[in-house]
Length: 212
Image (cartoon, rainbow, N blue to C red; front, side, top):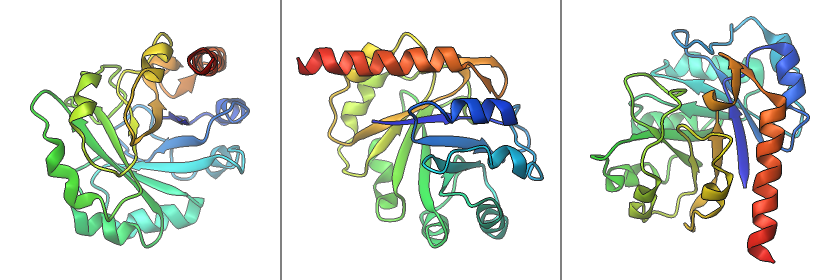
């Protein structure tokens, strides 16, 4: 299972979280966000371990700026939270792997995202709110069964320290991993090493119990 920790900014904290058994770290390049990482802080980004993928989080960013930031910081993925078109995603895929975010509520139709399947590497299903991510709120995970596509997806939106068993019970062939953020924070953009370490241990323990 992919574990992505999103919204990191502090150099010491990034170095600390990089020691955990995670696969992706999200860096927020959306200026209005409380987790925005200033573009000049290359030293913070350099703290990420080489075996962890660097994911840049963007909202309605111009394609040229997206490419410039991706190349400047050596991003492995761009995570697109806005209303980016299929053509935009296809263009972005020429210089980075693409995670396309869709914000889910009770009215969401998974059939609407099918045109994106050939232009992205992962879907990410987050909770629809007035802001873009980091709300700490969950949508109904039962809705995931409505997704009939084969493109792998990450689950986000309000995942917290007590959700390990529920996450391991998700039975969907395209479920690839999780994206954790605000409910593991000590302050905006500062993640708790202990909380995440315990959570990962619980995920592993739950997995062992299911397979035994």
